Length: 267
Image 1 (tube, one colour):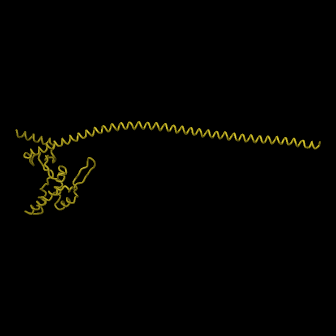
Image 2 (cartoon, helix red, strand yellow):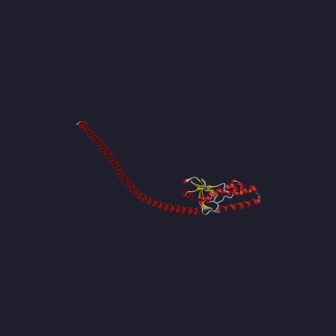
Image 3 (tube, one colour):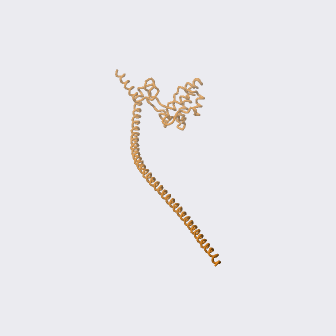
């Protein structure tokens, strides 16, 4: 009995220990369950966030796609308008080119008619004008002989002066006919560009050094006139000339001069 009494508490203690262990195990299981639940909740939360992010990203991409489509349509519309405007401009340009070509033809015809009129007047006025009348006929590009005569008389005497003058003058008449000799330079830009005599040309410079400024200027003037009135032919051509103003006479000036001469003859 005493032994039973001693073992009894031990059994009771074992039972209490078992119950304590069960409670501990239960507590551990509960903790594990709670931990699993928390992890599950966190994983679901993370998946939900990832899903929402994907949805937002897709929405953004969709918005971008919509905007891109709208911009594409807008650009297509602008391109269509530009094409229509371009076609219209091309049509206008073709019309302008036709008008311009018609004007060019008309201008050429007018210039040809004016040139014919000038040539006819030159032919008729040859016997009616002189170096003393206000309107005369001047051969443009013709070399002025006077400076050559003067220069040779200053250097030579008698017949020698005449011979030297004839040789020098003839030489420069021939030089002026050489189309390959083009002692000009361009000055200015755009519509203001023009050709002027290049006075540092080797031949002109040599002429000035040997025979003086006046002889060189006579050749320079002939070159300028040839370049303006007969650049392709390089020979003197007759022109109606306003002697007072030292320029080519207009047809109006020539007609007024002829009208005045007729009136003077009838009175």
